[in-house]
Image (cartoon, rainbow, N blue to C red; front, side, top):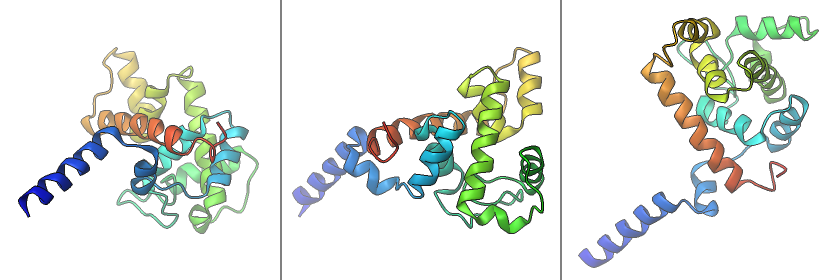
Length: 176
């Protein structure tokens, strides 16, 4: 019995360390792949990056709500989403729009592209701003201080790790 238990633990640890594609797909499912791929293409984003942000933000749950009031797949706040809607020509914005995967990913992809442009394609800074806000990141930049929030550093590292996993595990579904 102990041998079987140790063998099972060994296999589990091996799979955790090597994370083959089939195993990664068990832990990190990809939903809404056509929406992710389409908006990544429209906004010149790496589709694995977009999928990684969605996984980190909501685990692909379109009905996710945060304690800070963020909603949907990409966890956008209503104020941010309303601004994006107005800026991109939308009108009649409703909070329920944020639980629609198509709208939420479109707005989130636009916002991520905006942040990448603002930070000259520096992905770490764009992700930090997605998590902590542009004002905080701009202040850190002006102070030459780096990312100051522990939670934000963890978030950036998590998304970067997830991006590699999604790229490897879903190569064909994401259009690589």
